[in-house]
Length: 250
Ligand SMILES: [Fe+2]
Ligand SMILES: [Fe+2]
Image 1: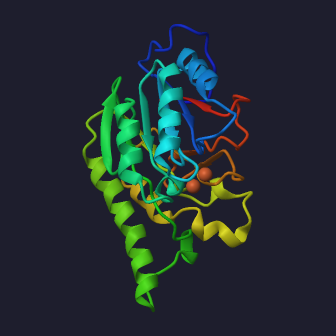
Image 2 (image 1 turned 90 degrees about the vertical axis):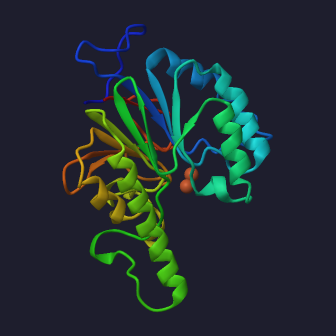
């Protein structure tokens, strides 16, 4: 598995690996000047599957989801995705989800789906911090509720991992599972960018790669303590492709 750009056309390689274009944090806006149509057309020529790593909309507004769904018509390859925190902002997450599913997006929220012999496992994840400095379940009920949500997301990831029958697995998150790929962000906000609980769960399984977004100013590449490759594919993060999306062979 490595980053690479191959010739257009025969995307599926002899070893059965497929090419995945992955991008996070599109933050689609209802009145935006920018359209993602050209980008979706481009990835359709470069890859076999498009993965969207959350924050699909800017404020979680139904109109933003409709706008993105319209642009996704230019995408001719399967699309797999998870929601991000921004997609929850307006309290319309059911409508946003329905619109994107109607547009054909395999929107995962604690589930797995198999495409081209690759298992895609998706969960949004949550905050909580990393390593020994992770927030622990102590003190006020509000803190305990926060930690419980973080643990719950890790457990939902674990349940989804157990559904996978394919030999190759790509984990799709919005929040970061390791510290390494949030480096570049202000240290004060590290605990709000992800949780090591996700990384610990991933390390109980054999995965081909992990992608996430959310840390717009983070670092592209890292790995879990167990050695799973992790890519921060937020569109703002510089990537080997020189494009807003990463290309991974899985
Ligand atoms: Fe974002
Ligand atoms: Fe986010």
